[in-house]
Amino acid sequence: MIRRIKGTQDILPDETPKWVALENLIRKMMGRYNFHELRTPIFEQTQLFARGIGQLTDIVSKEMYTFLDRGKKQLTLKPEMTAPIMRAYIENKLYAKAPLNKLFYIAPLFRQENPQAGRLRQFHQFGAETLGTPDPNADAEMIDLAWSIFKEIGLTNLTLRLNSVGDPNCRADYKIKLKEYIRPNLDKYCPDCQRRYDENPLRILDCKNPTCVALNQNAPKLVDNLCDDCRAHYDAVKEQLHRLNIPFAEDPYLVRGLDYYTRTVFEITSSALGAQNAICGGGRYDLLAKELDGPDTPAVGFAAGIERLLMVMEQQGIVLAKKARLDVFLAPLGDKARAEGLAWLQKIRATGLSAEMDLLGRSIKAQMREANRQNTRFVLILGENELEKQEFAVKLMDKGEQINVPFETIIDFLEKESAK
RNA sequence: GUGAGUGUAGCUCAGCUUGGUUAGAGCACCAGAUUGUGGCUCUGGGGGUCGUGGGUUCAAGUCCCAUCACUCACCCCA
Image (cartoon, rainbow, N blue to C red; front, side, top):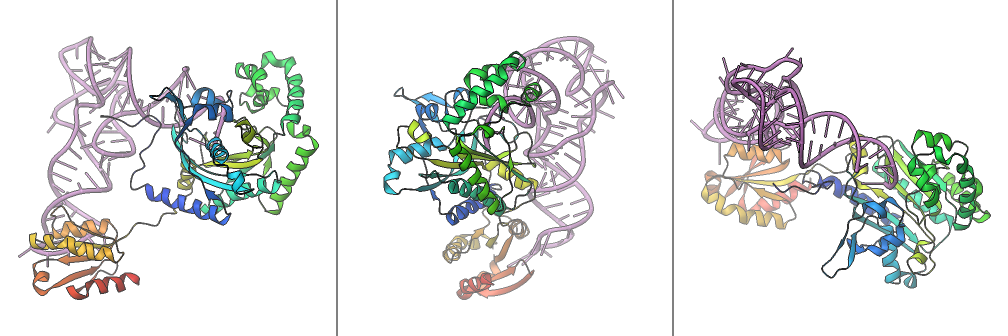
């Protein structure tokens, strides 16, 4: 048996309505906030991610699906969406069409990690990006957008954590201070942290190892070492969040795993999930555009995991999708009725109603059972009696009543009855 | 990459500790009770190389070894 690739999922027909309902809600909310959808290819030149996300990040260094195509070009299935959005923004010169671009996406992404609860190799994210302004209002609007979507879904028990990682200037100063703090005890840190010390010391603060956590207890905090501009920006974002009534917790050790972030970073977690509890992460990335050879473009965005959202919704018993209903089930009895059935279905379907008939030659009883299974509103029985009298026996499944309706008026009848 | 757990019917699982007739249950499916009528109830039925390969034994779903798959967790993240 050929099996699906590890860490991928088939989304079966009884699950797709949940996806569609969630996607519809996302699109509705993106519309309210005036964000516009941008779709990018499923793969890109590897270079885009290596330069955009950062060589030393986990994503780039060990999780990308990278391969050579037949022309020996190195390609990568996109592991995140911010770099592709930025690439498209630069390549299509969207900055020249409008000074500010508010974009959103819903897309599958690929990372070759070991799968576990809430982590897949092909997974889906939706997200938004505001390109072209350094205004802290854009940061606050972005968080408000994410928060509103989750609220609209009906999620509870969410926690928003907020931090500022400064800009390259204050971060460079801070890195020196941090390394000074760590150096005396460096040999006591875990091997990962010892490696991070030179590569990316900020990530040492992120370490979950109890020893490292303890050692970090009195480490200087980046938020205490922001330059004046970054400080003012961070304060403005917090003030707006208060005005928007969005509760948040400042987390001085929140460091995002991607290199492009500057200033605002945030993460939204749910207590309903297991080890992988982040449903949304984002922040400001004022330097990415330049890194990708584009014009200087301050930007802010977020990404949220659809599978994880669906898991939380499941946990909380939230059902967005309406139970599917079939309007009409045609139950033909005998060969003659079966031969005429399809043409009737075509007429009924042309009115906009959904219609189905038995294709298995089942008994009337089995057909009724099938109609019931499909949550059918009307069953049209077409047997020898009906053919002779030129009428349908129509069973109104919700009421359990049955009446006869002549062929000439059946369409009219169904349209009126279904509108009730 | 590391660690732990689990593989028995379409699905969820029991049976394995203490090896011994034809391997069970619930749900789902099919049929009948109701000779042309759903949901509820009752009765019956179909469906399994017990993940795979090897070993121990008179005898293996059950014990041992290997292997594969899946799951969860570490790391990191959505």
